[in-house]
Amino acid sequence: MNADKKVAFYTLGCKLNFSETSTIARNFVNEGFERVDFDEKAQIYVINTCSVTDNADKRFKSIVKNALKQNEDAFIIGVGCYAQLKPEELANVNGVDLVLGATEKFNVTSYINDLTKNDIGKVHSCEIEEADSYVGAYSIGDRTRAFLKVQDGCDYKCTYCTIPLARGISRSDTLENVLKNAKEISEKGIKEIVLTGVNIGDYGKGEFGNKKHEHTFLELVKELDKVEGIKRLRISSIEPNLLKDETIDFVAKSKTFVPHFHIPLQSGNDELLKKMKRRYLTQTYTNRTQKIKEVMPNACIGVDVIVGFPGETDELFLETYNYLNEMDISYLHVFTYSERPNTEAVGMDGIVPKNVRAKRSKMLRGLSVKKRRAFYESQLGNTLTALFECENKEGYIHGFTQNYVKVKTPWNPELVNTLHTITLTKIDEDGLVRFDFDD
Image (cartoon, rainbow, N blue to C red; front, side):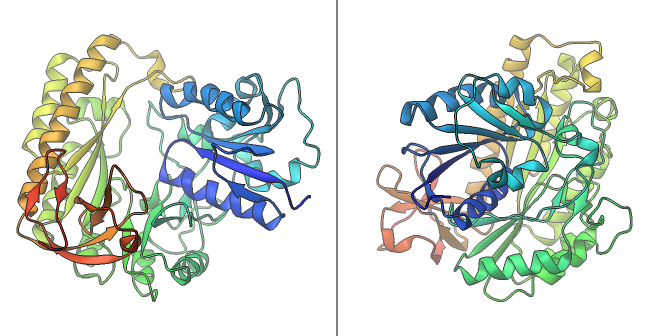
């Protein structure tokens, strides 16, 4: 392949997608390509898709259009979850040349010997039952923090979710390979690693999805805590039924794991949790959050919640709202339920009108603002360590404390990817904690 070939990437969706995009990009670089930004002219544009919401599906077409504006002759490739679920739909989008499924995306460079534009995109997509091998991934160079993939796929059968159809059965990286990747990240000077996967608390299922547990999630956490050079380790989203007290206790005394947990709830009503086929009830969730706050009073707890699930009456929604309002949590990620093909929920009674879903979403987003503000106020006066990001946003550089308080200070490029101990003293008009080094 010619050394002057340029490739650009666009990632939709989760931290796991970012880790995989970064790994795919390194494969291109190893083949002699130069990686450029997506708003630059390139010969190839790779779009890593998401299928969690309708909005992510719809954005694909506009992203393809933007790529073609940069280069009308560009070779456009769609990969990721939506590419696995609806490959023909992506292939028929004007300008798309190649669509790769769940396993094929990691061998993308072997599919592009001919960069001639196609009238209709070619599809290479396995049956999802065949997605039983594991490909490790991590992001580096894209952000200050690195996303390290430790697990893929999911064996849960939540009635609203297409991810098992897009990513296959639960399977894990070997402990040895995770530690090798963590060391590689450390050697690049990255200060923070975020563990990511589809269902990371399920870590330990063998490389080919067998049920023999080689290691547990707790063992993984303990071994990562020993990796030299990493200043911070952060656990991304983890199911409440898989977040054990032993893990919480270990994080509380760990030298690198930070006091920040993101725990999906989805509903504060047990009846709806059963309809969703979640593997816990609200009491388990309450127990987990109380345990975290007991051993880490300053911990940040983020929550995923779905509004408008079939059967969610006004009374049941208010039950969720009141449950969250009373909980000692720090912020919400609010998802408006959208009908997904081939899911059990599509055929359920009690459809919630879209305008009602929007109203409930707005209420919970307002609650999230209130919760985050209260959490930030509770941290004023505390001395914490902030890791600064790499962007200049309207004259400020932003960073996050170990417990995920977002801070800002006037832009100084020397602060990028550095850790600084600061005392939180004031919240600015935009809701962030502002400080000046000369205060």
